[in-house]
Image (cartoon, rainbow, N blue to C red; front, side):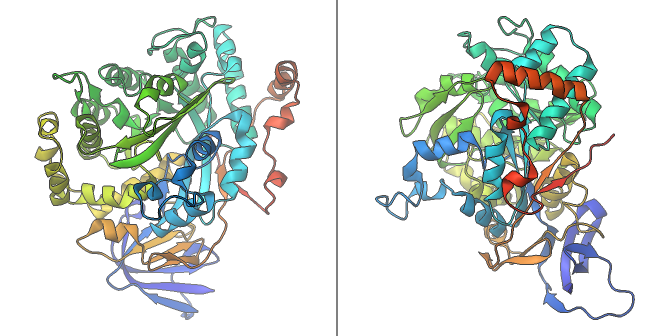
Length: 546
């Protein structure tokens, strides 16, 4: 069936388009206008509407052990908790897998990446992702605190051997890239270390966080994995130390691509009587000057949420701030983790400055193709806060109204009131469509050119940008209409995007022995086969760049 989207304002930075035009869809893809005069089977009038590719979220915790631990810890956040009144702040926080797909689709998002999958629980993560309707998904597999890798580095093994280990792990776990969380920090935590910097060494291994990051960066680059090593830096959230950790990590890129996660949580200085200040401008200048660096923000928004992280050292340190006052810290091989509820309040000097720091970074990093739109869901805020963030970026007046409600000392510590920049539709489309697709290596996503998958989001323009982006007029997934007037009208199944880099067979043999000796289990228990998902063609393989 041939469909024509007629007379919409197409905003497609990847193809240099920002004008009124038609789009044609056939067999789930964007196609050229028929040259033989064939009439479309269906025409949708998009006059006056904004047409973009489906949005891509590169960093959102939507599946896996940490997410489910949060659900178990906080049943009152969910609709199934019947004694809770229907209209509370908590009703915006807890999502089932079903609701995750529906809420993302309603906003025009069609691809979401779960950024912290443990190799040992990859199958569970993929089974949960397969339960999320509509959207395509992907995962980043976590390395950097595992015994096997640190042992290889300690023993001086070759770059090719380490590449083979990374390739086997990515392929077996069906990941789209590699994440490193406080490299060596969780391993050091097991030895009672409570502070761990970029050049500190893991006890018993003698390898530093810097060495782990550089080793993984080299392996990821050498394998041709499109997405750069995705780094959660040391000392997250520690005033003064966090900014220094981010600066050191940026400097360590040394010309090779590197991606820094949730940079807002590293934008904290230790100036002023409260010993908490903004380093947003400083970090933005570093990012602007270091072209091989990309970042996502992790914007804090006000209200109840829950922090979930495999950085068990940081979560252990922050458990005293839990609201409600309960938390879970757990430890296991490689990264452990923690779940700590958080209630960000606009009346709090600290929370309000966190909010301002995130916006400083968004607005001061000049290139929208190197800064990505995230709240580190649910850590900074639930992903349902995205429409309000779009409004804050696109409308200085909206920012001013929010600023006026904050504690006055916050205004003395942020330059946000002085920033006049307002994101354009092209900036938004770049940051949430074209650039993420390029970063992830998904060449047929994030644009509206010929051959692209027909993931399309269409919005009714208006002065209220939160309303505009919170309720899409139409959303198409693989050419099927799934949302109309902000309401899901069709449930379809997306696929999980993954890589299949090849490792030398000797590494598979070596890992077979390792898993048997360490766990008493064959290596195949750590692999994710297609048939386990219980659905036809659940994965889509993205090519590596070599």
